[in-house]
Image 1: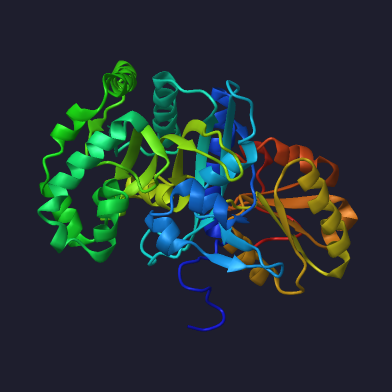
Image 2: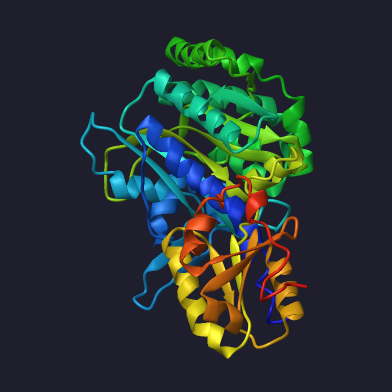
Length: 440
């Protein structure tokens, strides 16, 4: 691999691809505030303890996937593998009973094997509703997620929901799950043999094919009966709201999510357009004790992988956003036209009209090839004749029609044709097939 390629698991985002990302980011910035969420930005690296204690020491992320390094001061730092723990660190001092609603957009880092939609530097958009606990807030979070997916053109998704119960449920449910796995313990992978004693629920999330097959064979309905009445009622309240809002879902007793901080509601959205690793978003209610604090912080949230959102939208034949093209391409014929055309381009931009000015000394035929390649809706052509007569030649690139108009009317003329997709055809009475500068 040459030096012009990025390291495995990371990508360059070129202009022709970035518009889809910007569309998702802009949609998030416009949509989440409707629910009272404001943007938060936290550092891309934190003290390692923020993640090791916040996410859970026995999780796959902490044990195998974090990018951890020591800085010059001997401090252990980690590139953030997810967004929630850092946000809890930032907002963990909020007073009991108060609430904060935030959303975030940015890169995360995990040392995973790269695959479609799964990178070592990946990007997430997510939300956190911190401080208040109620099934209504969990349901609101899930509904908001599904509405957001629809806003960006994703409709063929599947939603799974489960409960992790609360702390009082753990002893009985853990013991029952260990009993179910005990007969197959010797055939589990080495990691799951350790999880059997430390955190048996993690086995249900193991991606090892043998462990996944064992998990799929278990009858887990009995575990659901072990949850307290409060936990069952909590889940029922969430699902009742979803049913009322006509949000389709499936209850999945095997859904645990990959992090240890979840309690009560967990959920995951998958999409067939992604192949085997088909999750596009997930989240749930959580409880995290920030480093240096004895008081747990409770919240509910979700995160979506932006790379996966784009793949899912594309699989539904939906392009989140077309590549942006300049509205005007300006061709200068001769040296004398360069400075006036430079100023014209600036005037157009000041009016919100995107423009590219071409200053290369070449033939009109060559310049028009560049204009065609740019994808511009109009091309302005000016040379010595146009400058002396104080006119501009404007060519409609969709049908080849040209008009020669007074220089003073150029911006007013172009302003009538929207760069946002309205008709760019020249009025019949203003069309001309003649002019001092004829485009070839």
